[in-house]
Image (cartoon, rainbow, N blue to C red; front, side, top):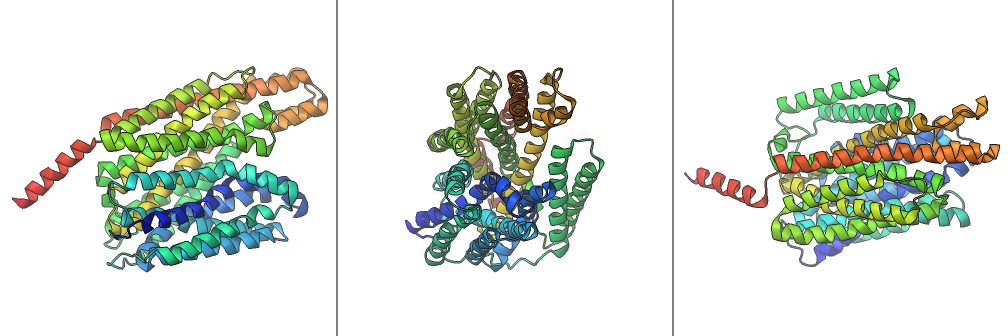
Length: 507
């Protein structure tokens, strides 16, 4: 571990600022889509690819990016990622065609794929075991806070400037990040110079891309869509081949032996479960605020802030509890909060206002703050400085896939519940398909038909679907609690196990 003194916190601060760009880019584009569609004459398929190009490249490049960081140097890769992110932001802002914007978004995804694992891999290299939970809490908060800030900042920019400005907000953040990393962070890399596993890179990249895209398509077209299912099956087959290949070669892309550690395995699984539920919440609540409560995009972002407030408070409190009682207690409390918050949210009715919503999303935020930093710390604690890049990338890849599956599966539950509850008896035939498509299309149709009954039916049906989805999220949280109690060792148990191994080695 490097001894940087207080400078390490300045390094983390610079990385935290840089991570804001990743969170912003996940949500800020959605606001600009109607304007972009008009200016660039984009089709519905191209609008979908504006988002998917980013997500697919991000999923495909995570593991190779971790390997390159270990091999070439983490500081070097961080600077390259930030510069790439800046250039891609400018290219996206000044795109003249839909194809140019899709290409710009793809390079933004590549920059994010390098930035996320590299920024995380620095933590076990420069922070002590006692400092690491606090550092990861800051990293998680920075990675999450950009999501609600996207609509707030993006809404203001779109009210005052042209749509390209939503990408240019990345530039000052990127400049700060590059200067801080260049000046404050010393270079670190693996002393073993791991070889590049070309076949492993291809299998993991194509497998993750195929699986992620298949899940995205299934979420939109339905789980009976043959092309989507074939993509998912192809992704699973390629990833299975990837695991088989990793067991056969010496210089593997990932260290399969990491999964022999209960801490790495279950820490990664728990972080993925939280991502599954968190992405689902961030998928449904904006729709609820806009379609049911009538909020504009900026108002939606403001209404999401209690989640972030809860996350920040939860991370600070869990840091204290973890130091005194161990991470297992923090995880149990966190999953209980998540289950309670989701369960309370699942009782939402049409008459409930934002006051009720703010309570349960704050509880959910607290739960995320308790669970996510601790789960990631448990997993990262097993990584050596030699392989922190690939190990961090593996954790991020699992979280990314978990998030994609979460949005697709939970979106299916939401859509099913919404359609089942709709009252379509008095609706003209040409409007039925639009109303069934989504809650936003339903409210638009109700406004065009001047039908209060249809508007009430659409909103009631959406809340019914949302409640069903939140019950599923609550069940996932209970599953997380069971896994913590059943498989995760407490700090004292891990210490006793380590002492036992050292004693046996001595004999």
